[in-house]
Image 1 (cartoon, rainbow, N blue to C red):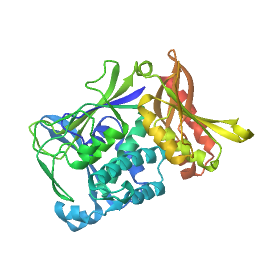
Image 2 (cartoon, one colour; image 1 turned 90 degrees about the vertical axis):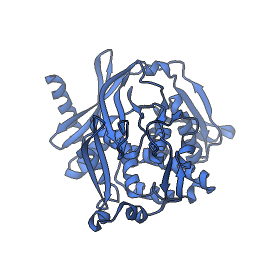
Image 3 (cartoon, helix red, strand yellow; image 1 turned 180 degrees about the vertical axis):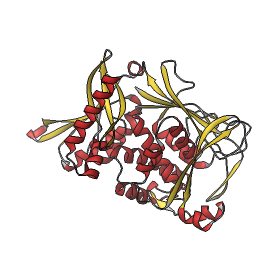
Image 4 (cartoon, one colour; image 1 turned 120 degrees about the horizontal axis):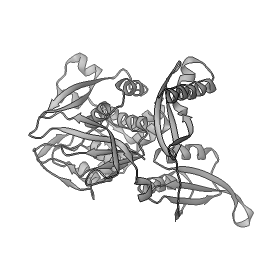
Length: 407
C-alpha cells in the first residue's frame, strides 16, 4: 500500500504540505501544469524556493496574487483584497476546472469539512458560510495542489502524528482569536494535539482540514512503513524549532493485513441511471477500493440495482455519506469481508513520444501480473496532440516494457 506519514512537530499548513510534496518527489513542473487547469490561471503566481529552517533544508511554497504583486500592496491590504466565496462558488470553480475527477473530489472533501466547521462556529448552515481566508486564491491553490500531489503519488493511505497547534492569538477576518482558532479547534476534535515551541498559530484551518479529510492518527512512523523518500515543507515563521512539516513517502507491507475491508451495499429501484457514473467517480475519489452494481428484482418484481462498495474501515464514513447524499438510498448493509487477496501495486512514470504517462503496475509474488496506463494522462495527451487514445495507451505500454527490459 502506497502511503505517506505527516510528522507535524511544527504544525501543518497548506504551503508546508506543498513544499513537502515537492521535496519528496512530485515534479514542480507537473504541479504547475495541473494548477494551470484551474479557472484561476493568470490570477496567481506559484513560487518555490529552497530555505533553511534551524539547519533543516526545506522547500518554501508561496502563492502570490498577480494583481497584488503588480501593485506592491502590503500583506494586510492583500488579506482584505481576498474574494469571499461560498462553498457553492468553490464547487462551481472545481467543476469548471480541467482536472481529474479524483483530484476534484479530494479538494471538495477538504472544502466541505472547512464549511461545516466554519458553519458550526458561526451558527450557519455550511452552504451559507462565506469563506474568508479559506476562500482566498492562495488557500484554493494549497488545497487543490495537495489533492494533485496525493493523486500523482498514488497515495492509498495517509497517516499523521499528533499536531502541534501552537499557542497565543491569531488575527483573522473576524478579529483576534485564540490559538487554535475556533474552526481549527472544531476540525481537530478528537485528534491528539499539543502546543510547543512558539506563541504562534502553527496548524492552520487548511492543514487541519486536510488531516481530517484524509488521515488516520499514528503516534509514530509504523514499523512496517518502508520509507522511499522524505520531504520537508517550510512554514513562513522563524521559530526556536524548525518550522517545517516532515513528510515520509513509502509503502506499508502489513497494512492490508491490518485492515479487513468492508462491503457497503444497498438496493436502489428509483434512481436515474445517469447518476451512477458520477456516483462511481465520487466513491473512488473518496478511497473506495471497488464499486459495482448488480441487476436484481425487488418486491413486486420491480427491476432494481444493488450497489456494492468495497472500502477500508477508514473510508467507511466518507463513502457512506456520499451514498446517502448522492443516491435515493435510506439504508446500508455493512458486511466484513472474510478475506481479500490483492496484487502488490505501484505507479511508474514513463516518457513516450506524446509525453509523460503514469502506469499502474500490479505484481504477484515478485512477478508483474498486469500493467495499466492512467486513463486521465492518456486522454489528456490524445486530445492535446489529436491522436487516437489507443495509440497513447500502446506507446505507454511499450515504453514501460522497454524500461523494465533495460532495468
